[in-house]
Amino acid sequence: MKKTIVVLTAALLVALVWFFALSLNTPKISNVKTQEGKSLPSGFELIKLNGEKIEETELNEGMVLLNVWASWCITCLVEHRFLKELSNTYNIDVIGINYKDKLGDAIKYLDKNGDPYIYSIHDYDGKYALKLGVTGAPETFLLIDGEIVKHRVGEVNQQVWDEEFSHFF
Amino acid sequence: MKNLAIFFSIFFLGFFISAEQLYPGLDEQQLKRLNYLSDNIRCPKCSYGNISSSNAPISKDLKEEIAQMILANKTNDEIYDTMTERYGDYILLNDPEKRNPLIFLAPLIVLIISISVVTIYTIKKSK
Image 1: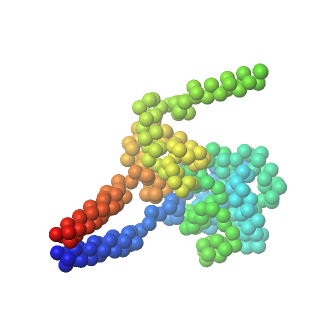
Image 2: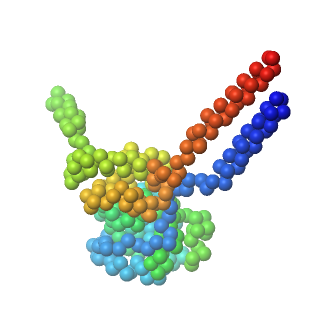
Image 3: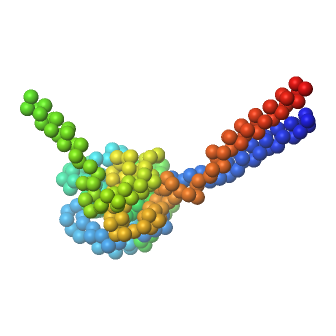
């Protein structure tokens, strides 16, 4: 009887360890997937902050860095200095997507903090950003010939740039 | 006094503003579907919680998009597919593939085995 109990306990322990090992190998629940590998949503009438129309083809040619920002977004303000550095020092063209923002607030924000963007798309209702897979601001997309090769959710700073973006340039 | 009256008028008016008015195109059945789907879709901006309990702008947008898809006669599966295509499986709170009853049964099984082992051992020893 004693032997049976020992065997049973041992079996139970082995089963528990096996369960534990299995749970370690199970991939953890991932977060929201990025939009890498996809292309930009089409069929939208895109308007710049100054009211000019943008052709979708403009965004689908060559290397395009899209940055989602808003005047109400605190992290965007933190990121802003680095974006200016990108456009000034690295000479990289950054296109902004002004997300769920009033036109006046957006223009005032750029006047006050400087404008690192060659232009910004005014996405007042956030519908374009929604289809693009944006979950909030700031987010940054790097496109090469219309394909999203990098999608960063959150702030881009020097470290993030060096680790995730710089090798594309 | 006048201010108080205005305050209470606005306060009680709030009771009559219901979800139906937020989605005017939807009938009662479709609203129920919207609520059901919103309960099962995770807010992509938040760590936990569904889009019906979240105040994030993205949750509001997603509910609006789902309402539009309901109006366009999309099935629940088609709506879930659109969401997972954009945000991945993480977006589904009610993912059938992730359901594993063994997780909930395992402690019970261990408990039953442990009680049996201890009982048998005690009975045997007392004899």
